Amino acid sequence: MKVIYSTRLSLKCPERYSFAMTCNTHGWKMLAPYQWCNKQNTLLYAMNIAGMPVDVSARQRGMLLVARLDSRAPLTSDQRKIARAGLRRAFDLHTDTQALFTIARKRQAPLAALVRAGAGRLLKSSSLWEDAAKTLFTTNCSWGLTMKIAAACCGPALSKATPSGRYPFPEPSVIARLTPEQLRKLLPVGYRARALHLLAGSFAATGPEMEQLLLSQSYSEAMHTVRMWHGFGQYAASHVLLLMGMFNAIPIDTVVRDYVRTQYQRSDVEQLIAERYDSWGEFKWWGMKLEKIAKRANWLGD
Image 1 (cartoon, helix red, strand yellow):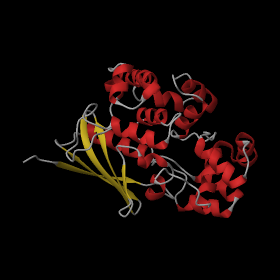
Image 2: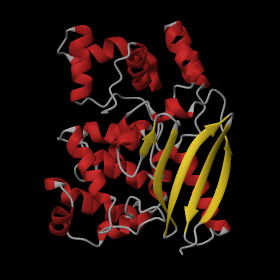
Image 3: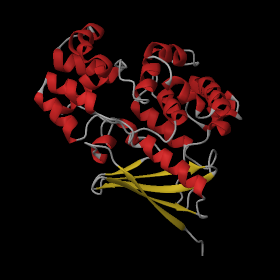
Image 4: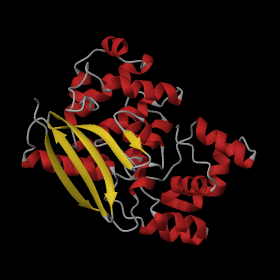
């Protein structure tokens, strides 16, 4: 009989925090290893903690985010510290929404009410590496293919199983050891194989320092840095930055274009964005996102 060790962690939620709203603001909840349980408002997933594959079950209880971590061995104090950092990043517990609330209140009361209810935060991954790789998976393809690529990444070929049989997203060092040709055989990434290989090599070499570097830069500097990554154009770079809390731009994809055509009967997307959302300043992306949520037009890919 296999022994499973359970660790329970509690993290304080910031003011105006909603776990359910955070997890349902964009489509990341649909990508492996995440599994959203709507009735329980719980997110299940696998996380690699210093080489140990761990099952995670996370939800909100009052103003605490509570998580149960199941592993095959007791977590060390260092692994608990890594787990806490991963939870804070994934569930955006560090973000203060006061500035967004202030500007939303100046625009429309319903939008400010959304922020008061918990809008203003995003479900992310436990690491920037995973967010960057998944962003690459969204480029020039359908959402269905994006989900297939993410699911293929979370399997026995690239990571070890948790006690429940889930597989965490692979570490960058694992991907970096494979050639683009090998990656194409393992994953339905197509032409993105070389970009994924190079991205993994960069993150394997730098680790958390990559995110620290970007956060120390201005928006334009960070945009320039990410645009230097192979395969990351304007859309992908701005998407990576918004997953780091930089909302100065709206990544324009087919979803945004369809929204503009449907809601405003216009095809000049860039001009419409400038007219309606430039006044939101560093929260331009939230200007459109809050509007979409208020209009019940916030497609999540489910």
